[in-house]
Image (cartoon, rainbow, N blue to C red; front, side, top):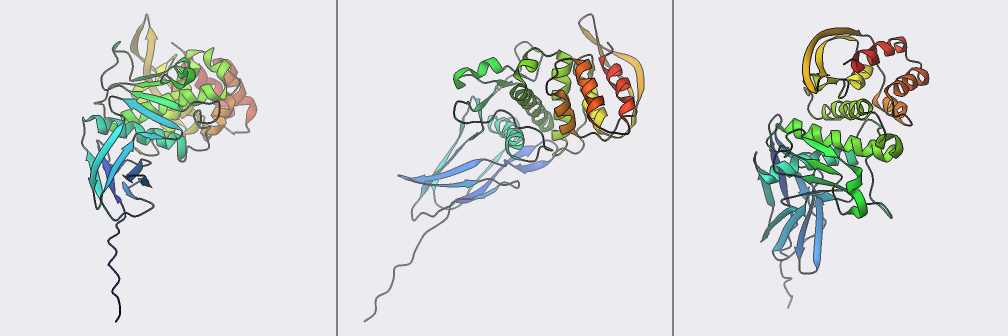
Length: 321
C-alpha cells in the first residue's frame, strides 16, 4: 500500500509598487526593499525599474508585507516612514496617486536611489554609510518652505551624530520632475561637501549653487529627457555654467540676474562656444576650489579641449550681475 504525499501549498511573495508621475505616467518606485514576514521568518525583494519585485523565499501561510523609504545609504524621513501592508497570501500591489504622502516620498526616494546606487555619469557619490559615518537623512516635509524661499536645502551641520537630516525637502505638489531635480540638487551639495568639506563650507555661493544646478541638469534629464533648467538659471548665483561646458555650442539669450535683492530679466546674450567637457571633468576641476576664478582656471588648465579658449567668456557671462 503506497502513501500519498501532501500537496505543497507554498507561495512566493511578490507584486508591483508604482506611483503616478506627472510626466511619465505610471512608474516603478525603483529600489524599494520589500519585506514579507511571518513570525521570525522574513523574505526580501527589491523593486525594479518597472515596479515589480519578488521575494527570496516562500511561505505556506499568510505573511505581512511592509517597506520603509530607506536603503543602507540613505533614509527618507517625514510624516510617514513607510507602508505596513496586509497579512495575506499572493501578490501585494500598491499604486500611489499624485498629492499623497506616499507619492511624495516615492518621488524623492527614486531620485535618492539614482544618486546613491545607479549610473551617475562617473560622478562621486553622496556621503556613504559605514563605520564612523552616518547614513544620509532626507527630511520630506509635506508642506511648503515656511520662509517661502526654497524647494529644498542642505546643511551638513544637521548630520551631527546621525540625528538630524542634512537635506530638507519642501513643496510636495510640484511636478514629479521638479521634485526629482531638487532631490538631485540637494544630494549634489551633500556630495560636494563630502568631496571637499573645507572649500564647500567656505565656498562662494556662485560656485556651490552652480555646481548643484549642473548636476541637477545632468542627472535629472537621464530620467526626464525634456528636463530644462533655462528658467531656473540665475546669473551671479545659480548659473548655467556647467551645462554650457558640457552641451553643444549655442546662443544663450537673456537670463535672470540679481539686483537690489530682486531677480530681474536682462536683455543679454552670449555665444556659448564651449562644448564636450563631461560632468566628471567639471567636478574634478571643482575639487580644491572655492572661488569662481579658481574653478575657471582649473577647467582651462586641466584638459585639452579644443574649445577651452572660450571658457573665459562663459564664466564671465554667468558671473555678471
